[in-house]
Amino acid sequence: MKSERRRSQVGYCLLRRMIPMSIVSLMAVITYMILTVQMTHGEIETLIIPLRLIFTYQMDLLKVKDEDSSHLSTSDGFLRSNVLKTIHKYEKASFLQKQTKVEVAFLDDDECRKSIETAKSQLVAYFEKEQVGKYKADICRIAELYLRGGYYFDVDLEVIEPLIFLANTNNYEKDDDRAVVEFATVLETGDFGGAGFFQAFTAGSKGHPIFAYALEEMLQFYVAAKKRDSVVNLGPVTLRAAYNKYVAEMKMESGSTSSGRSISSLLLLHEDKLEGDLKRRYSPQYVTPQRPVHDAPGWGCNYVVHDDNRPYFFSRAVGAKRTNAHGAGCW
Image 1: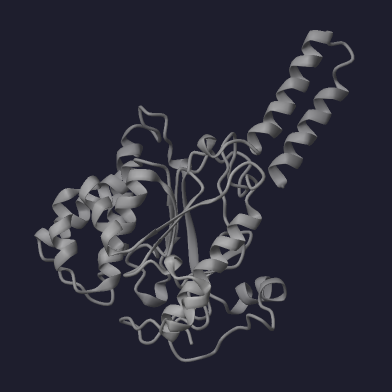
Image 2: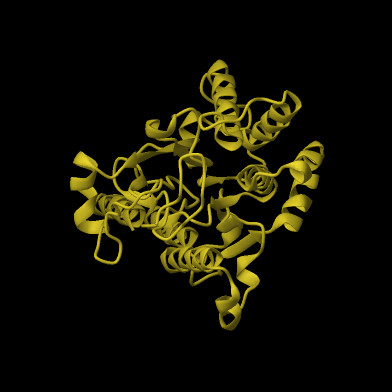
């Protein structure tokens, strides 16, 4: 854990300089170091972004028992398996595992309706009338993130390496001076329009203004009956508009708000095709015989969500056969 190693190194340097310090000062520093480690492994309530894994689908796949899973369609059976893998990887990787279980929220249409009613009741009627599943999910995920915060995953997103934002000082290891991340999502690849966010992974704190703005943007999207096509999709475009609005407001306030939030608390990952330099950097470690670079027809198979250091997700798991505007899924 890089953050712990960094804190240990700082503590070591302090201890080396402590010869002229008083016993009281020495004990204060030791106490700080102990508390820092305890906070790293503390209660789930200490997290800015709660360790809640959020999924949405027309039915709750987690209510299906293992012995009954054979009755699911091939597609639903695959999605259920993929969701369970996501949960397992996050439970295994969580620094909090010894203290508390990772919370999981799986919202079917009924549960989505409840969240939307509480978060933005005007959207319920549009949710009810919506015939396109992915747009229903767009509304639901933002409502749930706004109400309770957490980590949202598409059911066909494949986790490579779990991305977890811890509380305390820097909860993201890209930059030493990065503030605590309070909102994160993915810049959509230019290969598929690049007009919005690839929100298959979106994380944020409870009540974050970006989620509030996104709910209003979605309402206006429906009220204005905006055209929807392969470039202008409900979720990606409205979340991007909400983000832009929030950033513009923060810039007017010199990069931070009265609540203490700052632009540095916003993280945008990237979605890119696993080719060229990206493939050379990541393939030896993350592309294995069990998960080869998949050259099948369809969409999203060889795209990864990454930062400058490592990939975290494949945009689509091999076996996901969802049909969308770009063709069949990754199969």
